[in-house]
Image: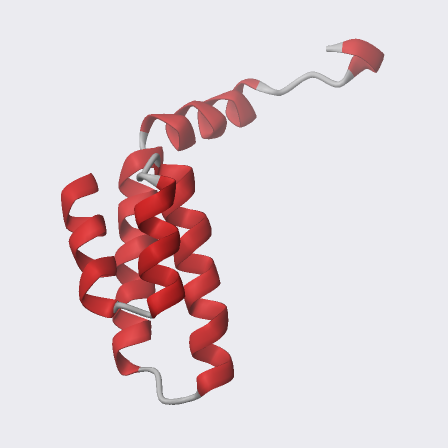
Length: 87
């Protein structure tokens, strides 16, 4: 790396394990977001959670048109179906 910025072997191991388990981490994050949305009663918190779910689904490779439609309609059931189909 330019400028002498190198990763130690320990840091390289951390980065390697992160990318090895990235899909598992994303699945867990989406599952937690769906659960939080289901239980959420605060409209402002729900809006933030919907945005978080939208970004995570797009990062996971879900169909952008379908994701945007479900988020715009605030369709919780559709969101859960997308998450289930992805993983």
